[in-house]
Length: 350
Image 1 (cartoon, helix red, strand yellow):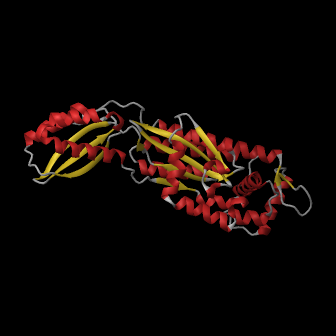
Image 2: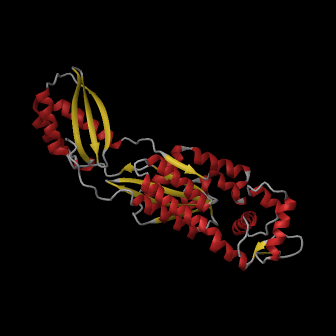
């Protein structure tokens, strides 16, 4: 049976609220939680109609309403189609906007929060391979040279180095050839003391500059850059009584606004996760004091060339784990397929 928009929205609020609280839902609750802008009297009239039609029932006198089997069926067959459209919109958005990563991740976080009704975190991708792809030395002036380091994932980092030697173009070219021939494709663990000694020996009178360059390369590779985290749905925590008292809510909100804490919450937990894994941390398992009444679900996504980010969902311990995991898998799949895992190496020197 078709219901008008008002009755459909009221039925949706009743079902969602009952799923979350397990308590009968009254007209005042509906008026506070919906955007219908209707009086309690009008909502009661609509609820009476829904009860007569068999979509909701009143468990006992003076209580609110709970959904009937017919109400649940209507919800599944009709209202959940909206969620399916959101997933479809998400897929279309990713396909059409693969070059606009920041906007994509913000939209992903927003849609994921709307789909789960929990707080959602998505970190921007960072390079985890740390392999050297290219090194370029360029003169700035007689006292400085610019060292450009290109890492796996086409991450570019620059470092200005002071020098007490004036290098001409031929000397810089020879150093570029020496560094790239020796170091390309290596990560920091493979740059051993023996390799450094051999490089310095081959550099001859420029061994001091090569030592400074190697120090700069190690510094740029190991620099802990600021992590960009896109968050949505923080206010959703107020929907759950066990998280909404002033002290708990304040602690959670402060945590979700602290970039360093978000990094610990996402990156530290996703660092050892296999590509296919979704991890669930319940209560104190998260090792974050403010999260002792919460569950945290995390997963990683990859964009190829060693670029990896993390997805996190924060909610009450009684969260709908199955729905959260399904939602994360959908988002993860879309992000994983934005770029192929193996991309053809381009000649950066061209």
